[in-house]
Length: 254
Image 1: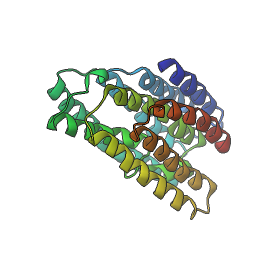
Image 2: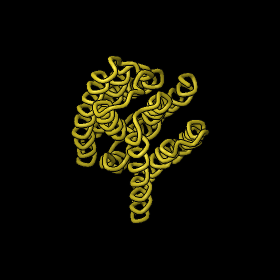
Image 3: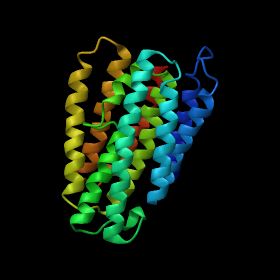
Image 4: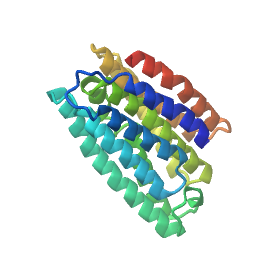
């Protein structure tokens, strides 16, 4: 699973480098893009809470810096929204880890299959923290601004490379058997909301890149609903879907 994720995340991150324009006011762009790709690679191999949080923060902080590189109003707005929502998501992620550890005594993702109030609340907070990076409703507000105001490389990394890493974390948590019905209901609810909102709002957009941003929200919803359905082939279907979606979005942004 990790190797498959790396085969998708690393080429996507390298492809995003081709979107960086020499006219950008800062020279840190390539290093930031590689750091974001490194964070996605860490998420692809993460089996422990510490590595999940490290990968998430590597991606988040690198993308914040990439978003604001043009230093104009749309880019700064995208960066501020991503930073504020990212801080809230990080807090929920850490609180979810703490509650899950209190209930299970382990920070390994494979060990979080216990039942009870603490672990159920921890799973809900953990899902909320991951939903931010996956651009699921109601943590989606940064996505259209990132696509329209930030450099294309940042949009590519946020829409492809980071989502690949987060999907693999979701797959590992889903395989561990998290508490039900919190986990599957949360995935289905956020996924259905993302599908409806993303598709309806994308129809109203006059800007192509904002339309792609809302479309990205809808595609995240498709993946979340597939995982929440509990179907036997849902993980394989989600990976196949993302493998086809990643090059399509990169081509559209190019």
